[in-house]
Amino acid sequence: NIDTIITVMSDDVVSKLLGRRNVLSTMTSSSSTAPVTAVTDRMMVVVDVGSRLTKVGFAGEDCPRAIIPSTVKHNGAVIFLHDVDDNDSSSSISNNSDNGSDEGGDSHEETKKEVGDVENKGKGSSTLDATVAGAKGKCKIVNSHNTLINCLHGFCSKLYKKHLMVKSKDHKVMIVRSCIAKEQFYLKLRHVLINFYEVQDVVIRDAHEVAQYAMGTANGLFVHCGFTSSYSIALAQTYSVRKTLFFTEKGTNAVLTSLKKNLMEDGAEDMEDKVIEDIYVRACFASHPPDGKTAATISYETKDRCIEVTHQSRVHSADVLFSDEEDSSIQSVVADAILATPIDERKDACERIVLSGGTCHMRGFKQRLHQELSDIIANDNKYSALRGLSLSFLDTPFLPNVIEWVGASIAASLR
Image (spheres, rainbow, N blue to C red):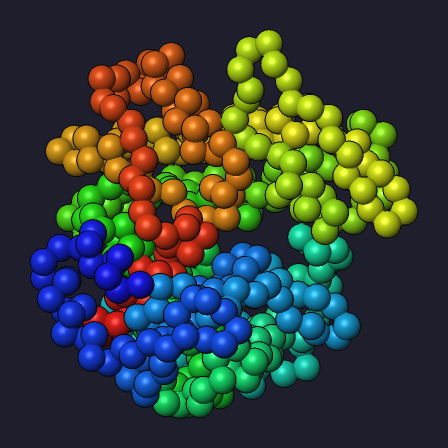
């Protein structure tokens, strides 16, 4: 709630929050014990479309109204919105001003004109030609501008009609953007909201920048570990230091792939993706047990059989995140970001590491990352300049999977 938030904010932000408290009246929902904020016409809608999950709610609230899969049904197939092959240069939406994309105001008319031209040129060219294994089975990749526009239109319809239950034209929107995701996706989402749902204004903000409102600090190191990728970037005096941005194509998906391989080696066959995900959540952890001890083998029962989950599957499935095979490890990404941080801000980056993303919820993840990060700094001469600095993680009152949304919620309430 607001009282929890203001305890970690600076005086000027606190004064702004207190000035807005008369707008936020709370009532107790009959279906939940958590307080629900009464919606007013002044409140912005905050939406964070992740690679697999979408968080949506209203400004000033301390948790999203809904967390749903980032999927839509198209031609009988389940489509993940971020799985877009947007290689066609004719189906791009240009943006002449970075500030325009962040604030969503000056470039709206230009975007509408360019998108209209693209749609006219691309009629009849909508195709679904690639199939990949997604988190929930076989999913198709969108390979057309028109198809993506249609999918986003249907997805927004579900958000407004089923979860938000408000008129779209009565509320402005803030979109939380990942700094390593495709810019075209967010521009097309803004186009759909403005042209099809008559939203007055759409603001696009970087996730790591709005997360500062929930972090309660202007300096630190932001580490995001999502489903398909992970990245790290330093923050200095509320500004992001772009040269410290490092990322790796490793996340929960890599752990699930490793877990499935280990289970198949132990004799399990024909496992559904939802079963693997459930085993990952219930039985696996990132940190290794003490020397000489092993994790007990457990039995996971399904409707038709029993799967034995051994020590190898429970403990070592997460090792792929901390291995430099195939792609950079997470500790290397974090260490590179700290090393690239200006020397005056490096101490704060080491002592204020903030974790976000669903992968961070894996049991023992924070302890394992601290151990691996300490080892790589101590043993690799590349990071000798970081020796002597203490490493610590900043505790926040919000869970890692929603900290970016909560920060955007606070930022939107101050507008």
